Picture 1 (cartoon, rainbow, N blue to C red):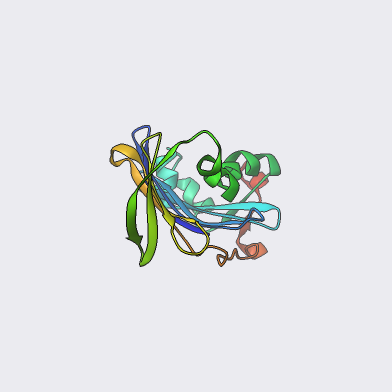
Picture 2 (picture 1 turned 120 degrees about the vertical axis):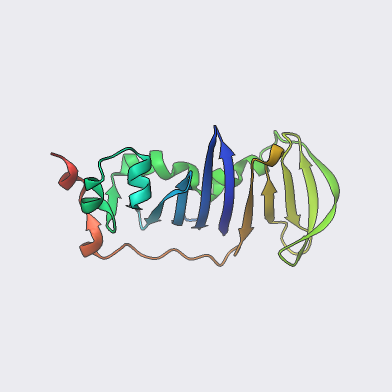
Length: 176
């Protein structure tokens, strides 16, 4: 699937523009307060490509961009699990399918040209679920204008392979 949108959490505006697969692949962009980076998790490895804005957001020296910007940083398996673990399809959608939330039917709507049921979730979220075919989530709107996520390309999103070795920076090169 593909997920795109923004969420406001803890005073920070987070943006997502990601493709995810059931096998655990992730590819796309994330941002915090407009400072973005690219994530690619494929074939058991995770890579990050940072931008000048993200270097600044992290309060790193601008010279760090000389070394890191435009390159993919390969994460260790432990770093990958801690950084990308919450980005899995099952993790992102788990709260929708768990037995805890209560849903109330609130009518019908159209989301990106697709007929949908409107469901109010007990936590204040509004969920739009496809009313024809498989009942996939199409949109989530967080309560209190805290953001919106759109879900598209169900069962068709693809993840590229690893970046070329010439574009990968070994983390040991960052140690001084």
